[in-house]
View 1 (spheres, rainbow, N blue to C red):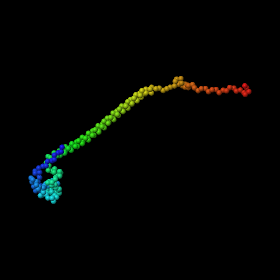
View 2: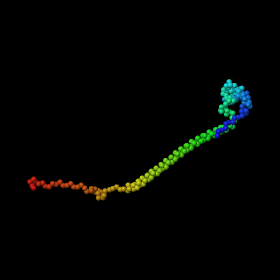
View 3: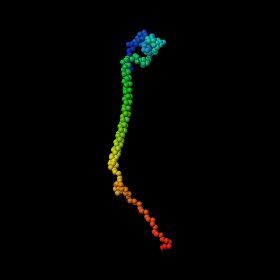
Length: 197
């Protein structure tokens, strides 16, 4: 919805020449008024085309003819203050709504991204917990096996030779009988002469 244009103030209330105090006639015919860049009003009789300085403050200035097309930045001085306030309130609401919508849009996007990151991290945590539980189970299994093997190693004794081989006291140690087979005898029968048969 477009805002209505600012209402123009009743120029009869205050417009006058700041030099001769002439007011514009009711019919406004053949009447020229100008406004200077320093903020003063003059009639066409007092302020000629050759004037380069304000007749009130003596400052160098530019002028705008109010009987012709007036720029918006100059026309605003002839609007009622109430209409200007309403216009700025309307602009304020439009600007505020635009910025609020853009801000909300960005915040929603960031929240969605954070939610996606949180969900991904939760899935990773579940995977880590499952892996941790599996490793703990493996550790417990290895520890139980270690406990079952330890008593055998702690109760084992040093192997000793049987009593028949090892004697106590100062006697010599008997050695087991030799398993070496006797070598065959090499004795030859008595020789006979070549003449004996």
